[in-house]
Length: 452
Ligand SMILES: *Cc1c(COP(=O)(O)O)cnc(C)c1O
Image (cartoon, rainbow, N blue to C red; front, side, top):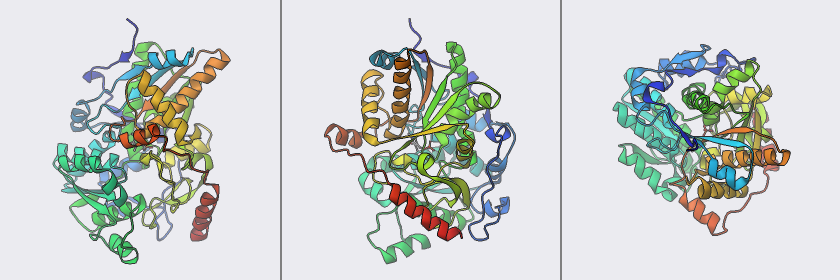
């Protein structure tokens, strides 16, 4: 029988996360305080994060042990399977071998619980009773709600108001796991009240929801804040993906020529790619491609500079690729990829040309998703479908060149809660938005004026 699914036993789960800070030729510049513009110290972050996570955020240790309590939960669905996409390869008629790591097997259906679980654990250990967080379409909020149930933490989620109304199933998932969900902007915070006073019908944004969750955490002693992407400790936790994939490919007797993942804030890309980049930094030949939507092209069209994480300018400034913190991407269906910035680690690696980036419009991405669903069977999340599109392109290039090539991509989640997007695609209602060059220039000009 041909080898299609490569699984590891519970005992083979990685027991340490990989920290790429130890090996980067250039480390990211430090985050700056939004008021003083001086590097932030641990004390600045103490009101909203537990010390264990603050230390991981700045750690340069190569290997960070995964706590037993976290491994106990991870093993409920990890190690996740690695598949060889035989049926997709056949449909493409490519000599390339395509492998994908499937993170949709977690209870929340994506890679996000890989960091939600340890974040809940460290907060519980620090004596916290509650976590406040934000969510756009609901993927991060549901992962945090899940983690809250495992560790007995209350979870309050500020959900962007337009999604709160339009995407009830992720909200109901969060409530099923015991979380309290508020439509944002809400009347519960100063940030929310201020916006509602000026604009009672404001439909919300991720940046506003972040401001509300941070304020909630900063003003309650028993409450901390949690973020689902971008930060160094989030990327660190996600490296279980790549560490497992390496072992699985070894079993298959293979090693990738190219590693691919979609990129919103950069965490699932970091998770898959960083353990392989460790080899690349040590001389191995390998390409890594971060794939983003053409309507929010942070790496491919953004600027490498300090910017805020939120719209209100309350979070620390991070040195990253950014489109400007008030850039408003068009309403594409890959909600998880609509962030103006990117992880400082991913940004620095791109700046140093250790990784590549590519942007695709949503129509070809949905065509790739359809082809994947019809061959491999899994209905992919719209976010993950960006990686599928890139993997297909790489496989077709191998075919044209008549070359063998081993391709590995991350299937970061399933699309079971995104069927409306598939419905719109099938009905021919999806459109490709114009390239937002002039909007990007405007928001970057505003950022420059603000930082002067
Ligand atoms: C949130 C999300 C992403 C994007 O976030 P990253 O931090 O860039 O990984 C990608 N895929 C899925 C399924 C998501 O839920």
